[in-house]
Image 1 (cartoon, rainbow, N blue to C red):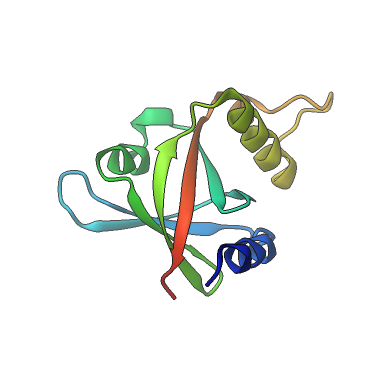
Image 2: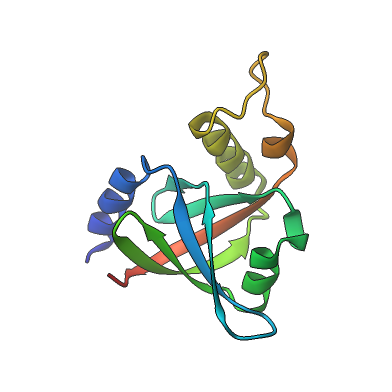
Length: 128
């Protein structure tokens, strides 16, 4: 699948309510899957961790950043990272806040959207 075809598929799938992130357990080595809200920009999937670095899935990907993500009937392989680029971080927070109605009455981001840890996953391959 070409890069453009991958972007097109991800654009279609971005309307799904949830994705399923699978990480490798940092201690057990077992695979762990969670259901989580997400946003897509190009080939990058963005997630927000309300538990920040204390979330097990974040601890797992910090040890092994190779993950799989299932959206609908498609599964992708990718590499996860903590987003440290301020512009990408702000864009991801706003995208998820808009998608999941996480804005206050005055239009500002909810506490979750402001304080969660932003994780980006560069999706590289279609597994299935």
